[in-house]
Image (cartoon, rainbow over all chains, first blue to last red; front, side, top):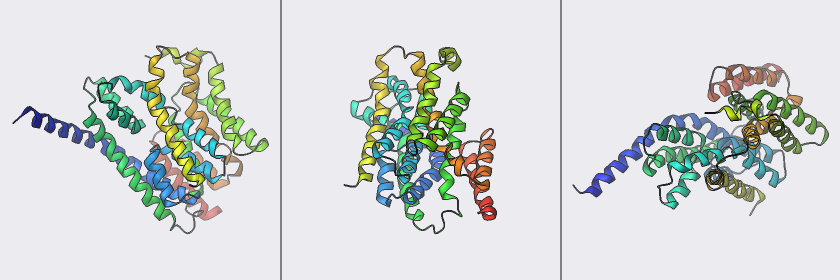
Length: 242
Length: 98
């Protein structure tokens, strides 16, 4: 038994222990992947386009935002900007995880950042904080199944979405607002959450009535972010974090 | 190539920039200004709220019921349970009020 086979065995072991941890994420994201595919088709995407978006963007909430705006015929640059805005939180994950994976080859790092989703960050950061090394094989085992299932299920959802006859009775046209409300509520523990939500809601409704869609998205978002910037930092709890 | 295709490509590049950019840019600074950090923290709630709020203008009883139930369930459950609860209420309510 050479040292090489030993290390190959341990790499495979690392990979599979990552795969085991990925399973809850695969299960939890499955309905959203299928839903994304169905909604993408409902908003004017082809099956191939739905598949491509899942394969290339690989970010659930931002994909939902993208197709919602696409369905409203929002200007393309504003759709891309919105995808960027919804995904902007990854900047913080990226800054955080960088020191954990700095020992990987550059190509592996580049791939690692591509699959850096919310659960990927959370699970990898938890492993690092428990004192274990975040190896590439383990990280790939954690992320790859989520990616593969996400892409396949999106395509399946798009194929089946074409077969749904009455989207109104099934509520398909209103599923995204429900989903986004769920996401908004998920951030409710953040400092300034309620003032930001109220400011964004009021500004977006006023803008929707006056300037019109799609500008209500940018105007409402800027109102909420500006409020957080303008209020004294101690209100936002930024300085108090450990 | 269609517009949709370019939206997807640009969206993918924008997303990858957020995933690698934090490491490339922010890690070079020791500190982020607290006000910038407060603004960044507010981005998700601010953007997502604008996608829900205007829908309230056109919402009927079925849609309101679904959103209220979603919000209430969210106080206890996870994303999946609140989404399923809101969807169930929407579908059932629409059978009665269309």
